[in-house]
Image: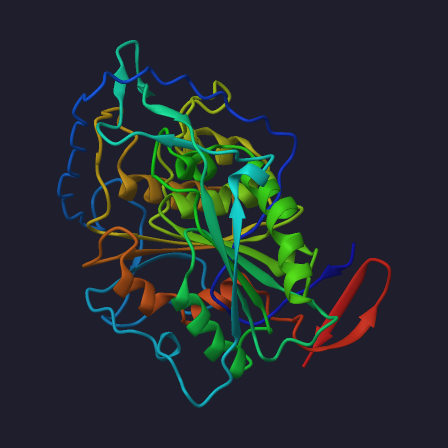
Amino acid sequence: MHLYRISSAVILLFACSLAHAQTPAVPPVPQPTPNQPVPAPQARPTPPTRDPHTPGYVDAKELPDGTVPPADKDGNFILGPTHTPAPEALANPNIPHGDIFEFVLNSADSKFYPGIKRDPGPLGTPDPNDPAKLIVTTSHPAPYTRKVTVYVPKQYQPGTAAPFIVGADGPDMLLFTTLDSLIAEHRVPAMIAISISNGTGDAQGSERGLEYDTMSGRYAEFVEQEVLPQVESRYHVTLTRAPEGRAATGGSSGGAVSLIMAWYHPELYHRVLAYSGTWINQQWPSNPDTPHGAWEFHEHIIPSSPRKPIRIWMEVGDRDLYNPNVMRDNMHDWVLANENMARVLAAKGYHYQFLFAQNAGHVDYATKKQATSTTQQKSRLWPKRSNISGRAIRKSKHKMTYRY
């Protein structure tokens, strides 16, 4: 396996890996009564607006309105309330545009995710013996199809190992537009983007929830074994095997799975970018090893584990989610979860950047257009000394280095 050093700034990221995870058991669904009406889903309550200077939150530098943090600075920052789109987030007709392809995966062909579905209606009932658990009785096996959308830049040279980003909840057209600009400006390597749609639904009992909220390497292994080989064979590209050249990105539970992929398989991914990361208690079925789901990251896992070679960029909005469902376990505050993540990452010495976005909701699109394309994110995720898009200057059995 060649190891690559990548450099430059850039925006994205996700990816895959896994090891020997078992498929969680899915409780059987009770048989419905004929003609029984389907209960209406509960509406999410309006979240409060949180103050970034709330006692107990991390100390953060307040930026001038409309600006973003320097690319080379770790730490915590407050931006907004104005979120002007970065130029790179806007389509530019005067630069090369990457080719965009699409193929479909069927659940019947997957050994990792044969498919589940939660019926319409209430999410579930809190366990009276443990408020951290949700009893879901309406989840059952069900087939699905998903699209995989692939962006290949015009500058990609066949036969070369390309860095790439794996994104959740695809397709992400903003990502593709941004890459067009950044690659044309030589601010990032000629990288490939693989934007994977979820298996439908959301939260506990759903296919999306099973994929994104489960604390294991299973989703990364699914990508590694069932997605990436098809990308290479269908579009005649070579994807780097080096973790420095692989990134994972997403919003909400898609942000959570980005870190889950890198955490459980750091030999595959070193770069994570998350908007409104769902570092909360949403794993289902429950796992006694991680009983609080992704809340465990800042509660126990990161504080008690050796530091891993992962760089993290993350953002949360001041109006992000707060107790959006029936659970009242004190582990469903997205702002607090992200604040806690920033605190434990700093304590362990991680390279990370955390943005508290004012005038922003959950996975806020205006904030994303402002921040996603900025050099700040790109350079935080890709080291600056060398990059895969350039000319090879040294090659050995273990390492290949590039420069422009």
